[in-house]
Image 1 (spheres, rainbow over the protein chains, first blue to last red):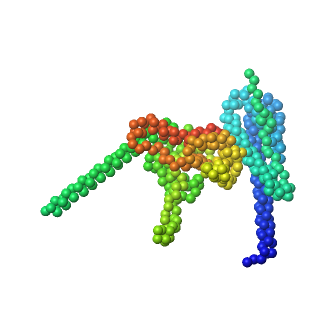
Image 2: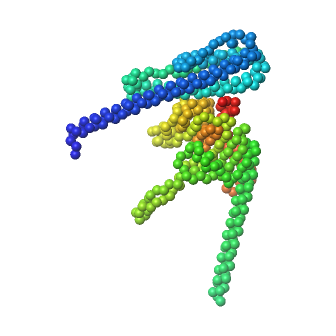
Image 3: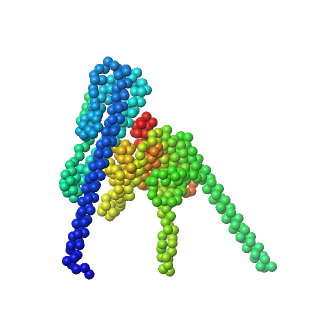
Length: 184
Length: 278
């Protein structure tokens, strides 16, 4: 039988080993979650770029029918790689406003609305918007998982040590969130 | 002489019994064929109303490769089924049949003499309706949804309403996450397919299923499998169904109601399942 003075250090050593393994695993989990967040962020970028390209083409087609709608064609929206989540939200809102304006202008031009290329681009934009929505929800889901792990004990201890910070959610633009007012 | 008469009598009785058995078997076979014909005609008629131009074969089932390709049900080695239907639902090709998936297991057990003997047991892995619907647009990734097993009694109190499983993604719908295991290698496709409205519908419609529902989105096909241990479109014992065909037809339509409801919900999102999207 093993003497008591050997059992205690052995148990302590085993506990220390278990704690070290847990610490490494939790740290790796945080790294994996951060990778997932950045992947989801690039998904948003890809969807936003696709939507931007489609809207640019739609704008060109609209120009052919409604060249005198000057203020529609003067607005410049620029996308660049590696935008922050705040900037991505801002660009999304700008693209929303632009697409709304294009559709409002198109209302006055029935030939434009019935043009095959316009309808195809409109369908493409709708699909790009669906992809953007999916990318946004995936990103927010990953952020929720990461932020929860940061706050909940005992993983919060690892997060504190690694100086991890909460990630920002990708919010929808303010006008969309407000209630729609209907007056008769 | 007495022995010969006895033998002849015995022979006559035996012949009579054999003829009787033969007649009974013939009558049973004729009855079975008649019931099958009635079932075929009624089911075909009822399904025509939902799936115009469909074809129905009561003896066939979906292909083995088609089922195994989804990887919705694990660990089975025998497939059987019947009531195969092929047709179109709201412009989309569909195929469906009853499916029974069984796993043959060899176990070692002690017999009454205390010796170890090998025994083969059959474990049902899936039994119910399996529907596959062709979508107009192929999805880039595969998504599988498996309904988690429900807990009852003390298990429910201790471990919650359902057995927890490892998911590849977690959606914003807590009830959906708890009800289904979500398996995918492409989380973006998962979120693209699982719209908030679709998840709400699946959760609320589950009561109608009467069993566990599994869904698989793979390429251009969506598979819906309902493990409810029911044999669809079957005639009731006796002549009850034959006497009341409208009630039988209504029951058939009710049996496919849950499946068509899910399909309707999928088609509602035209952008997701139409040719125009890329």
